[in-house]
Length: 261
Ligand SMILES: [Zn+2]
Ligand SMILES: [Zn+2]
Image 1 (cartoon, helix red, strand yellow):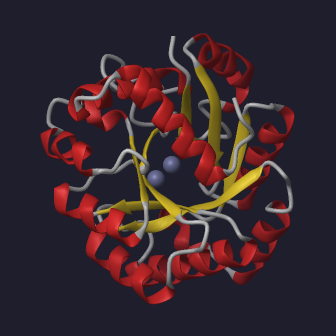
Image 2 (cartoon, helix red, strand yellow):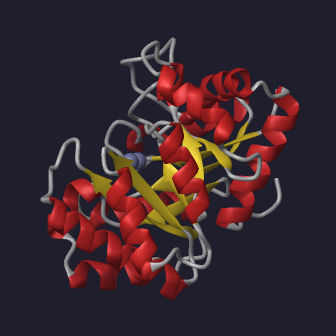
């Protein structure tokens, strides 16, 4: 069993929060040694609960922010609260922020303003940023180009772009994290992009409880299932599994400054 880190999950989501002990036990059995649990969904209560869960569990670390879906509610008061939460030693990143022009649950202008504010906050707090990007690669590249990448870097999570987008994100300095989508039959474009990400920039994630990989597609996702995405990634990159596992653990630990396994 190879060690893995789930670089992006949502343990405070209502589908997982009442089963955290079970989820963590199954993760451990699957070799998933650490998890980055991301708040950011809905209200600040989700960030608060995310930090609480991280503080209760040695293997769980937290990211706090405002999801692009909720960017219309990203008030300055919310950023003040996020800054306070980021005082916890278990908060290792700001996010997820970003742009989602597929759903547009918040107007694009609100998403862009919130993204800029997150990039500034990450720089100010000396933390990396976690970025969500759907159908918005060009604008993301432009905005990060204008505001600047936070000195601690960032990750584009749940990568759904093509080879060109992967190249551009890497050139900007981003890490790229692949989710269970990689295992979906219709995801050839994403699979083709995987070998373009350098060995020292790649990560894996579940985005649990969403986006369960095959053969669990459509079911509730959880960190233990990241093994399936890892196996798919090893195939598409033509990588030795043990070598890839070590690279993924090293990349994720370095960017989020996690303690050694
Ligand atoms: Zn996301
Ligand atoms: Zn997410």
